[in-house]
Image 1 (spheres, rainbow, N blue to C red):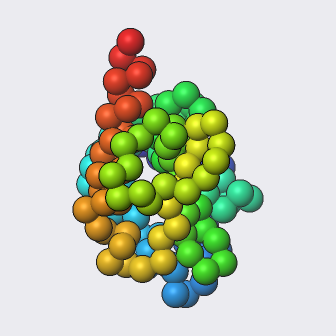
Image 2 (image 1 turned 180 degrees about the vertical axis):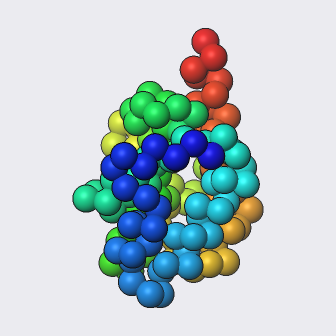
Image 3 (image 1 turned 90 degrees about the vertical axis):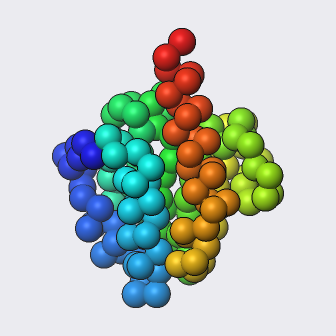
Amino acid sequence: MKDLAKRGSFADIVALADDAIRPICLRLRALVVSLHKEACEIVWPKHRIASYGVGPKKMTEHYAYIGVQKSHVNLGFYYGASLPDADGLLEGTGKKLRHVKIRSLDFAGSPAVTALLNAAIAERRQRLSK
């Protein structure tokens, strides 16, 4: 994974999380890396997010982010409105952005969450290859 740590490191994000949700952050990051080994990771500690993409440009090349909240972790999708969501997990009403609230380790590694990430990665690759 390409790490552009000029803004921060993933450890900075994990340090902001309550003890109960730190393992969820780590599981989600491990899932992203397992699905997209050459993912570009950029961390913005001020915004409490780590963002992932096929390149460093947030709004054109990134597909997902891990966002630390008080009692859960948001797994956000920059183009979530266009993703297939057979399980109805995606929340949000914006033109493009959607997110899933992750509150447990089991859910973080679930087939439904994995499918959303795979679809997001495929969507960015396909869109940018045109």
